[in-house]
Length: 532
Image 1: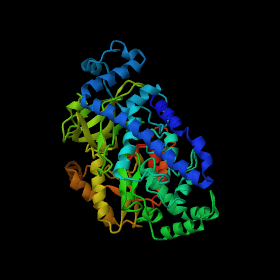
Image 2: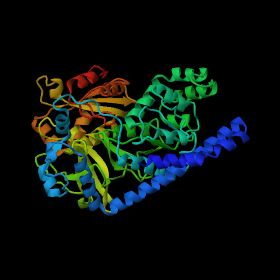
Image 3: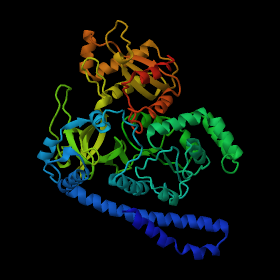
Image 4: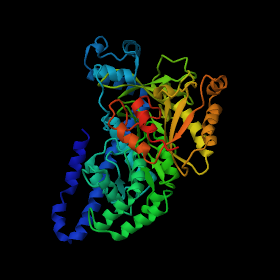
């Protein structure tokens, strides 16, 4: 509904172009047209964003009423025998009693009728996606003026970080990325040909990490294409700049290629923190990172209205899909069974997100855990901390994703010159790697600055795990759990793994990146690429 008035406004504002077009030289009128088109697009975007902001303000001020409307919308759009007796009713007790909590894997099995579910789509329909795009663009432009000026933005992946990409808007705002490109190399080449970029976009941080790894691996070929004019006019000078920038190594490469670059825009999702850290420490050193939204299970679940805040602050909106909060209790033995509404969230507490959408109509536990750090009107402002499905447990110790990442970060910090690019873990039973020893973790890491791992370095991860987890330390002391085994994989191993994950039917990627592999074939995929 929103696109029609926007398109009408664009058409009305562009009508005078036919008369003025004949009054200018070809070069001047192209530049003038691009500038006018940009201003018209921003006018339309500003109007639409202001309308969405007013809607968001009203919904977050009256969060109880907004959530009732979201639930009613979900119920009215659903079909099937499960909704008999609750259709039209929005009493929370009736709704919760009729629809028990399910986990994401259970919901997939029910929806697929026992068949293998297809790979998830990178599209994110819904009003939350439109809000994230419009409000995110305006907030980004306010925080970093001129980053969205004509010719200042390029997307280097086939997927966009904006949940509702709005192709016509990207063209009007003067992005340098070729329209309708289906080849990631073409996107990268166009970005490399444009030294004046201020904003670099990618679908997710792990995808951008793969872009920079590919740039290093294929830099000479890319420079040759730019020099030969494939595509576009030959740019031998720019090709020489690319070669010189690559010769100086990965640290600060983005700013050497694009001196005016200010911000990197990627879509946040599970498993992206390591890639963001690696990019910030090496290729994108000195640049700000911004994600307009947090995506999970194929949809937008939170909005980012604060580009200037590091670490990702997100607002949980009260609209569809209907969102509940399940308190996360300490210890794996006890689980909460009663959910809360958004207005009932307490600052400082952690909750697992529970979503009900219009299609499946199941109260699905996403596994994504948030910590409430503030409020926006009556809605919680959160940080995403971990995913429950990415925990390690060979003896019931339940090492969470955030706990393991902290331990691994401490260990890598003690490896001289090492920078962590990526990692994945496997419980030893998956690989049948007991070999007469106690069950343990198999950890695969990809590093920069370190070609071999000594036994002393490998042991540091196990020591760090004992420091961050008293339960793990106790199990290690009793011998119930063996020491974690660390393996160094070769360059590009995780890039190849992600390519394999993209075709794997049960994988949530994209956009999520698993840190604990549950399938033997994927674990063996990394095992074959161990170099130390």
